Length: 128
Image (cartoon, rainbow, N blue to C red; front, side, top):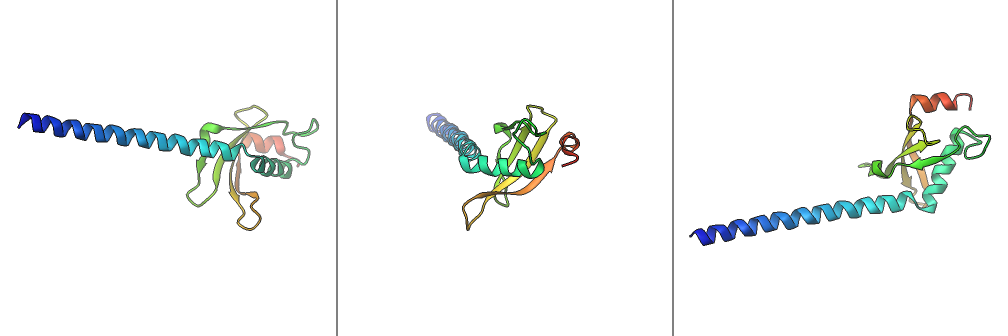
């Protein structure tokens, strides 16, 4: 009886362990997929177009937005569709831009569907 009980416990623990491993692997795969999308050429075009709407001289020496970086730790899928991205402007953690970018079903291009800026970024961009 004890042998049967211990065998059942071992099987249950093994099942939980394997289930946990597959869950972790699935999350890692999902994260890699999001990073791959965020670093794609189509995404770069969409982000740079969005930045140029905010600052026509963005990514040039005359622009207020000189550089941008995607925060890979903050990527997530939006339940309504698209990829939620946090963008750090000019390597300053106070200058943040949160956006959701979706793929247009007709053209296949990425487009911004939501945009939010920090107060500090708003102050930087005043006058544009």
